[in-house]
Image: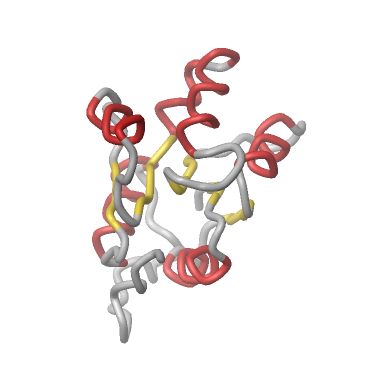
Length: 140
């Protein structure tokens, strides 16, 4: 079981990710500021950070850069989620990082495969169970 931080400004997406990744120790954040609080608090470290790329306020890009300035090893923990790259800055960002970027709507089997590959763990034996709907609706 891995400890995973899920960062997305859409409640529906956070809930869908929690359902898809049940069996892991999941912590959610509705924005970059909240994620930063979770990441700087003492306690068990996160094994993986699933983070929306574009969010109001502190974006996923901002969070990644902030952690890179202070704790560069944490940057490797990021897997980015995006409903589309709408700015030149975001497009440039994803072309210059080596982290996985998952497009919304995402396929839950693909997501679980990336999570397993990144953390080397299988969630409680039900990570490969098929879902009735293996994709989340697109981000508006």
